[in-house]
Image 1: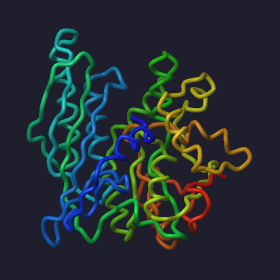
Image 2 (image 1 turned 90 degrees about the vertical axis):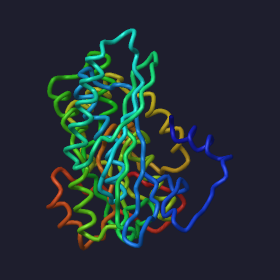
Image 3 (image 1 turned 30 degrees about the horizontal axis):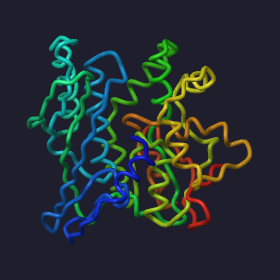
Length: 322
């Protein structure tokens, strides 16, 4: 569901506060955080979706990495996960489900967490994901509300998974593009999260279905700042530009652009990056707001991380793209 539709669906729901609820839905953070002791907070999230790749084992790994990412985006460490499965038993052999679950389990184990159960339903469309519980120290959370003017913006993974997945469905994805896409989506955001905590960072989000600009807008709103992005610095996966030229634009990108239309100021010439900036990602990287003095150290510790912009004082728009 696009961010605009989700915002409208949530608008009429009353919000309930409690001092133990450290992060709820109000700031569009990646997970909820609930205090259970002075030095322990639970981080909880859920994510599931239909396959975006053909291989069941790859799909399981990608779905798990995507769900685990929300915990890392809050500065947490995953502890347990529950499988969520909708499976068309009349159309697909159960061996497919076994491979999906094995992929998810292997990725959860890689994260140092455990699969402790789950729930399945019979459906006409295959879907898979996980509900994940993690832990974090309440004094060392990463949230949308922690960005400060002067911070530098660092993106830890390249963009373009939604565009490449769309190209793949149309038979237009090269072998190189597919390899790069799969490797990125299966990689965990744990090292990037731990490096952020070590650097004293207090603001991060992971880039998933709302695209880079959609998730950046949540930081802008929650932190009462403006996000400035240099489009020329964006890291992009191999084959993305060619896929855009061929018209492989996901429907989610258009929904994201509609949501953002009044929030973004585009500098002359930057519009050509619009499809990349609004591309809905699966298991994308972290967008981290880092104090300027610590940025170089963070970049040296996180492979593939790129500085793409800065945080400035709140202006008349949420995001400036130059």
